[in-house]
Length: 421
Image 1 (cartoon, one colour):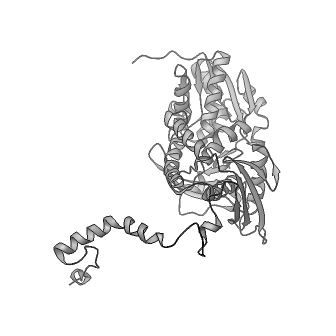
Image 2 (tube, one colour; image 1 turned 180 degrees about the horizontal axis):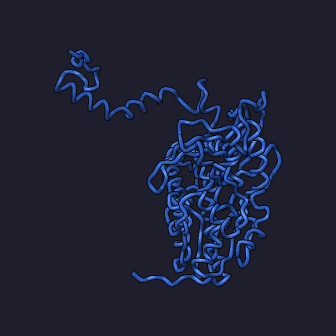
Image 3 (cartoon, rainbow, N blue to C red; image 1 turned 90 degrees about the vertical axis):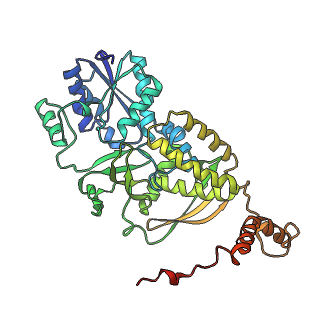
């Protein structure tokens, strides 16, 4: 096996948290390389405060911070929502589709800066290491990838803090922080601490984007979300850009305790993990989009779309955003969304989203077709021929059974034969 030379200049995906803070110093100490920190602003808010000073004080030659919130929503989040993709029926993929975007920019910056290596702070037990590295492989496989958690002898967060203290590395992390969190404009995730026991109920103080349904308003609040070709474009009668729209929905959804998910999920690396996700605005958008599709898509398309949504979610979760299959599925989804335009009216109440109405100029629901009254368009007598043809295979099967045994094989069995002694 050919051994790659040590990279001389590395672009580190930098969050400013405990892990990446010590990684800057560790890379310089162990690889003797220049370190450029890269931070994508995906909506971490106050977590970005003081990052530049911290990175430079940790030994980085420079730090690049850029606002990718709009690109994140329009190129990654909304396409996934349009596909209806949720992982294991619950998780709205908030962390999963953030990683390929960060990796893409990390690779592009490495090329711009003449760097020959990439680094990240993902542990060897998690999904993110796969998402970062597979994305980088798809975009520029010539770049070396350094994953310190798979190399160093630091085994715990306490070890990491001790390393920082020893090397005078500035931290914003304290030993009292028990949860591992990931935040962006779409969601907030929580892992670790008491959550490592799936029998334990999460502490209310843990939640960040939503308040408990128990203390949320006692009066329902009605909202209207507008879509154009499957993409959300407005809220309560006002056209909004992606960032402002999601921010407003997060605020109103969080106020009513919407979007809390408690999930034991199957990680890509083979183990199960227990996490809590807060996605108030995203939960509203997924629900509204689903309701609009119910009147805009025909049965065959809608049902087939449900099937590909599962595969789409797996691809995103498994780090295969940059894959031919995901691109192909996007092509299918785009065609299905051409008529998914309209409005959905909902009420938010105590953690619930109650659908009140949906309308679209392309609605396939027609009152004159669905009515049970007298109509010229549908003759109820036509149903007899349809039923005869629809049930013909089963009728033939029954006739063959009767010919041999005297009764259909689907007649109720004699359960007396199965009585215990």
